[in-house]
Image (tube, rainbow, N blue to C red; front, side, top):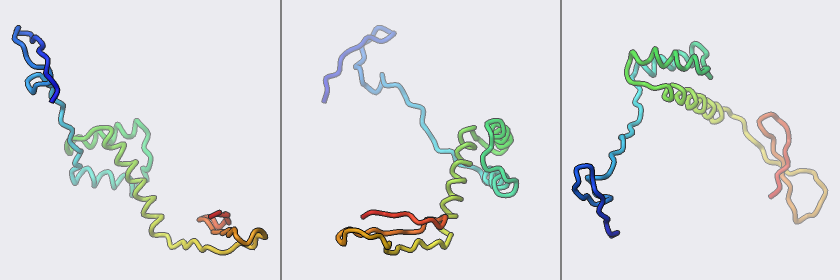
Length: 130
């Protein structure tokens, strides 16, 4: 254990540096827990109103409206839209039945080297080396 040094306090007494009495308390960080109204309104904007990437001004207005339904900050609204776009993109990728077939290329070359082609999502061929 490290030795604690003495440091005078405002009242003239000495307290050990690093003691719990002298430690600054950190503000506890809590995660934002959206209310059902928050989620309902955000989904309404995202899915029915087509608000996918709101501007800063739009985000501020949305935040002000949502404050009626509970504690919320600008960053909560901003990141909700960022995360929702990412979820939609991920869901679109996973639900698309695009199969990426691997096939041998007809490239002439060394028999010890195998070149593979695959079709990407746009139907173009890309060569992959092992």
